[in-house]
Image 1 (cartoon, helix red, strand yellow):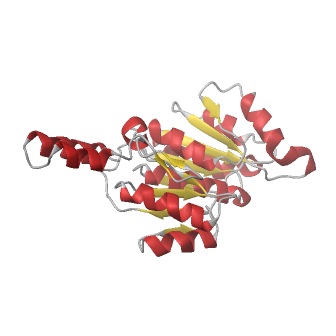
Image 2 (image 1 turned 90 degrees about the vertical axis):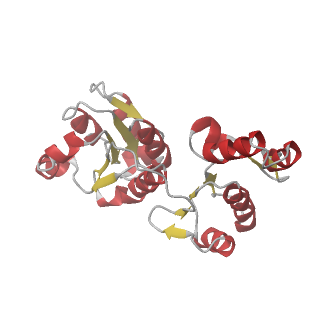
Image 3 (image 1 turned 30 degrees about the horizontal axis):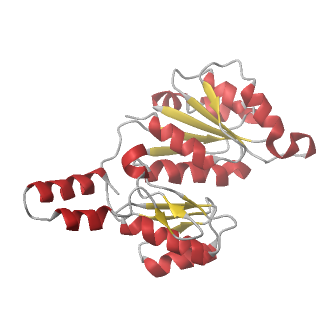
Length: 247
């Protein structure tokens, strides 16, 4: 439930347009709604500023659609991550506005337009193979009403590609850096800007990258103090955290 919706209910009660009983009926699903297989947090938007996000992996399409229905019924925009086409189809049946970003594996439903935040988030990848995780970060930040720009395939193997965009990167409010292999790009970007850098290690790389452990350790051991690190392949976490850093 959005803050504006709750304020509207309270104003209606105070103005005599709605009875206390009617208000209680509308609010009965707070703070969560029990579906048996899931407790949908209908209070999260009021509490945290962003509605609950559905993590679709290992959930059935039917489970995802039932959760989505509750979130949308409460007037919130919807983001579902790690979704496949079956999840998308199930959500599309309950809301025709559903859109699917295949690279990000994300389903979005925007039923309410909100003002954009002022700070731009720049999403940077080391390679083309890192783009799916970067797209998850981009979609997440955009669903949290942040302007996002992207800069893909500018890793340290050709550092001139990154440096040619220095001004754009420095103008961002926050920078998300997505990199696999050895993960050095986050430290390089951190040394170029006076803004927060959210580093995302990916599972991209040859055997000794250990499915993302190597870039994770590189990023955690960065000597650049403005770099913070999320989990391997966690584009969602990076996008969410960066969005909280914007105005």
